[in-house]
Length: 251
Length: 260
Image 1 (cartoon, rainbow over the protein chains, first blue to last red):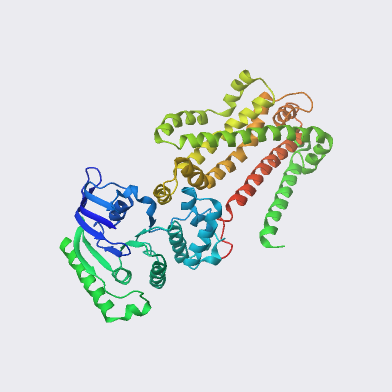
Image 2: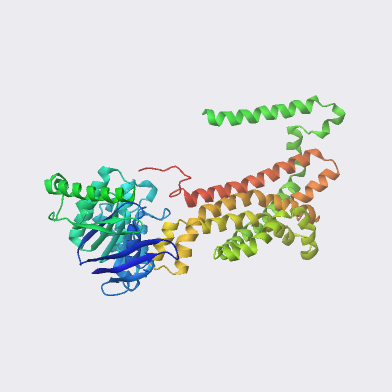
């Protein structure tokens, strides 16, 4: 359970990044944040991760301070952030090495994490031998290796072509069926946000604040066919219009 | 034979021809100024033992200085990478060390350490030091910010961040430093030997031979000495290039991908 209660965030004496933001997410939810640049989307993830303290209000992760709960969560960045000198399997085990998991237990977890993202056969490859989509899969496998309860994803597929992005979206949901983590997903893509989430939070910029919340009542599991359904199309239209109104208010 | 092998060989043959042609075109009385390729080969026959022994002496001194520099500079770079304040405190003096020509340093060091192998190796050490420290420090502080964030997120201890992230990320820079140092090491040892070399048979290096042959205007042996300096430098560079390949070829972008 993640709770934001009237949260305010500014860096030093700079402008207010997030103003009076309140929302809560129950276990197992998939929440997306969408909004124009400057609406503080990534900052929300940093606050949940406890990488940066909030200036006002309260952030709680399972009724604890975020930095107390950090072992429960994993982060997928916009870049794959792989270590180029390590093979795929060695990259996946980095978080486990850092937290002192012993070697014998690491191997099995790495194998399973790579199977999960469909890269079991690429364990010995170096990152530069992989495509952009494959690198991102490795990055996701690495995030999942510590069996997180909360997964934070900061525009993880922004740099990929649409086909690859659609595939990875579907894979991400399939993995979630098996693992059941709560996801917080930052994106610029309306289609992606609607496809993945059960809730989409549309944010307004300068300062970042909640503009509107849209519930996505499409049933899981969602597949490629979901994108063709009228309800999906309607929701994409609705969120697009909300996003447009936010952008026009700024201009 | 492929063109890319044939052409360099051809260039070599043309240059040898030119060299011999110029040698022949000089008035026979002054022809000794530019020995023919044959004279140089003859020098090896006559002075072979002395020449090869000197190459060995200089090679050993260069190797000791080079290796010591590779180790010490790495340790210093680690220290310098810890904070901008530490860097700011030491960099100006490193620069001063680099700005002082080694031929000025050499006599001072000999006064302190005495002539012979230790001071020759020390001069080599100094000439290799700067490019190694600067490159390695640069590498250690240029780690991708995203990767540093990743390590912080997973609560890496400082030691883990240094050894699992910063040091491997700095390897390409360190190896660039080593390549520069490899070209400088034989030069350092030869210059060192000019000042600090021993005249005792079997313990004089290439620098001492250069002095001796030039004092006697023995041009053939002098050219042979030059060839050996070139050979020594070539060996150093080749070993480091091989090391560079061995360490980096699997993952670094400077080597073309093998498959995928």
